[in-house]
Image (spheres, rainbow, N blue to C red):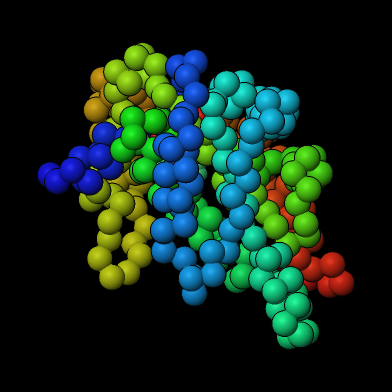
Length: 253
Ligand SMILES: Cc1cc2nc3c(=O)[nH]c(=O)nc-3n(C[C@H](O)[C@H](O)[C@H](O)COP(=O)(O)O)c2cc1C
C-alpha cells in the first residue's frame, strides 16, 4: 500500500479535539486543498464559509441536531453549494439567465462534497482530524438567516476539524461492508434478503458482535436514523431550499 492509500485507510472521523488551535499555515493548506479538487467545468460551484465566530459555532452546534462537539472544534467550514455566484456572473455579463434548476444544484452539491473531501484528506495528512456534519441541511430558515445565504445557495456539508485527543487517535475505525456487496459490474442488481443479512451480520461480527439479531438491530437503526425527528427535519428543510429555486413556479424537484 502506498502512502496515499495508507492515509485513506487510516482516516476516521474525529469528534473530540485537543484544546489546541490549528496553525495558520495548516489552515491555509487545508483551505487551498479544497480548490484543487476536480470541479464541474472548473466552475468551483461552491463557497466555503470559514466559521470563526464562537457564538455562531455554538448556534450551529445546536441547529445541527444538538452536537456540542461542533462548538468545541477549532476549525469549522461550511461548503455551500453555490448556484448564486454564477447566476450573478451571468446577469452581470448580460446573459438574461434562466433560474438555476435541479441539475445545477446537484452538480454544485457534488462539487462542494468533492472539495470538502480534499480538505479531510489534507487535514489527515497534517495530523488533524475531521468530521462531516450532515445536519447542516436541517433548519433551512434559521441557517439561511444566520449565514446570510442568498436564494440559490444551499449548505451542502459542514466539516469540523481539530487535533484528535489520544482516545480518538487510538479508537478503532468502524469496519465497512464487504466490497462484494457494494461493487457491482456493469448494471445494478438489488441484493437478495439473504445477501442483506449476510452483509450486515458480517460487519457486526467484524465489530466483535457475534450474536446480533438482524431484524432487531436493523429495526433499531431504522428508528434511530431513518424515522428520527432529525431525519424528517432534514427532508423538510432540503425541500424548503429546493422550493427557493422555483420562486415563480409550482414545479418541484
Ligand atoms: C455526509 C455525511 C454526514 C455526516 N454527518 C455526521 C454528523 O452529523 N455527526 C457525526 O458525528 N458524524 C457524521 N458523519 C460521520 C459518519 O458518522 C462517519 O463517517 C461514519 O460513521 C464512518 O466512520 P469513519 O468516518 O470514522 O470511518 C457524517 C459523514 C458523512 C459522509
